[in-house]
Length: 320
Image (cartoon, rainbow, N blue to C red; front, side):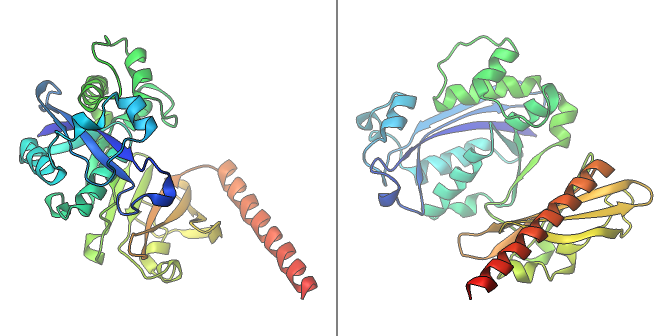
């Protein structure tokens, strides 16, 4: 299997959000990629400038960052041709690698706009080199810039940053330094193309936690009635465990619970509601090993939310 390390540069509406095309808020103007073999050795590269069709003027920040003008970009390749060439260049057996989680999202959003999303079947498993760098070489939580990682590893700066091929090349060099066990274990899942049916739902067990990605529901209320969504099995032994704190909402998108496994201890559940472009919702649930201290914090969080709701209800009754 090869690794396709790619980077995108894009433009946005130069006249502000009020005039942007909501279907394609960021229009890709450059694709750069580096192909690595299974030994993480660079074996090929791909680069193309993409002809703008939606925004015919460069946003001042875009021009400042990528140092390209519209006259040069107008000589580029139409996106629907460029993406077909790129996918063909990727080959048959590969995994994407990016710095962060936005490039793959915007790639698919541009593909959907031009009616070629069928070229990439989702949900897509990929490698987020930014996350992997943190997991392997830092605290696992922070997310640093690509240039920071290059400096941290003492890599030679032979190209300017903020051009697609250069950033793909630097990302590939950083990725090659990441421990193979870390990159093999902590792959990411992009859900721009989320599961549609129950048989497409995703269950992945990582060291210390499990991730579940559900099919679509008409509403979050419907999702929370689904037994699989609200279940709390121990992902280490597979046994159903009793919830010590039942699911409760914190804001409009997040739900929490706490369960206890007699063999493996406290398990924290978190549900995030994700809304699709068509107005439906799907669930990303994580079940994570934790400790008594966090269990107490979750309990206090629930009590605080309950207290605030009681105060709000009293205030509403007093007004009426």
